[in-house]
Amino acid sequence: MKVELSPVAKPREGSRTVIESKVSPAFRGEGDTDYICGGCGTLIAEKVRSGQIRNIVVCCPKCGQYNEFP
Image (cartoon, rainbow, N blue to C red; front, side, top):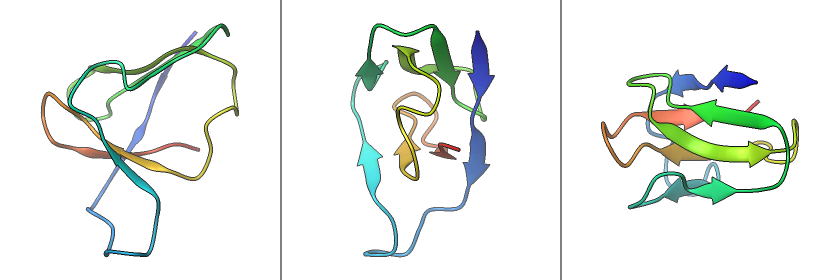
């Protein structure tokens, strides 16, 4: 299953956990869900379990869009 992440503005420093990965995907697991950038569709998290990654923001290494995990 593919899930498009929600694009968000860059969080204020110290307000959220932000991952600024240089590679795609930033996370790999053994689940059945792929999370893609809400800006450009780049793979951010591959084969993770739904809900395994929560309450963080990831900056897309391709387009620079900040994306919020549900």
